[in-house]
Image 1: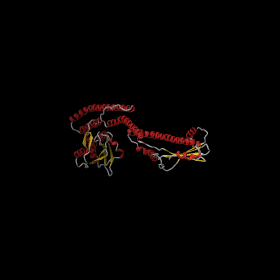
Image 2: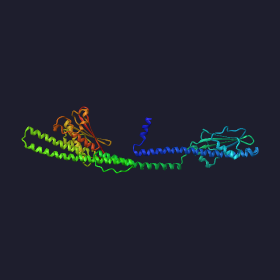
Image 3: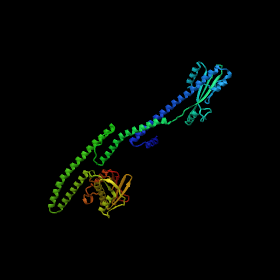
Image 4: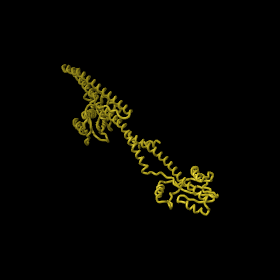
Length: 467
């Protein structure tokens, strides 16, 4: 059961529109198939009844002739009544040994024609398993195509044996065989089914468009919101449930946008207020005689000012305000490596990789990664690869690496890779946080992992599509 369910799941289309169309066509096939079975059975019953009643009527009329005719004329009457499909003969006993369950209509018709309700009559109807019948001699040419079609449709032969007691005590035995038609699909029968399939597919397509269109727009809007891109409110279209979901998304987008804007304005004002006293403190320190304490104070003020600037830049979300542009990532990485110096950074040869990014923001993120590799590992080995739909940038060093439990923690703001507060060796602890913010705003991911044999690698994965 599980294997069958998994197999059917793989066959089922994954999109809403495809599943809706598949379910409608499946329901149509089931209903039409059941209707065709019922219609075919009813038609078979009607055909069998018509052929059987025709044979019963002929048998009754022949019985009337035999009752009134002299005995020496019987062979001539029987010879005239015979046909390729119906055979008549007179015998001392009945050939039909019992009445079949569905023989009542034939018996009633014979008795009605004879006008004798109490006449002894037997009718045996049964199907026969046999090879396809050859076309009997004497069948008109116009009936031959119908016979051939019935044989090709695997028709089921049905034998009807009638035994009617004659007035002189002997029996008229009538044997006929007719064909219960099989399933025959003509172009006239398939045309309505084809038109129905086209109509169902059209309705399913229109319905799916009303559902899938707004849902696709909602997915694009959510992705743009997650990347920090400005987006207009989504139009309210589609069914009521989809409109309600879209409206809730628009409200969430508006609240998040206002929250980020208010936070940015607040931090900008706070940064401005902090810059003034820090600048005044630096001026006062510059006016003091150079002593060990004044040098120490100056260093602390500069560190505080650097932290304020870095914090403000991180909070504003540099990656969210710059317009996107098409750049060659291989060329961008080459310039960054040259800025650091060939003895401390290297770039593996790579073909041009044009990608839609925010150039200044991504440059800042990659520079942070390369600077960290040089600062903590002595050298930065940069490589650029492409996977289906993904561009992979790897920045590796030859340092001591990190404990496994710190590989994720170092991305948090103000978490530093070394314990000192020396800005020359550790910075303020925002480099990796800013890098991850920028890369995630591009729809990408960043991961740190220890290298086999020592060292640390920062693996960046960026989608090749437009941000």
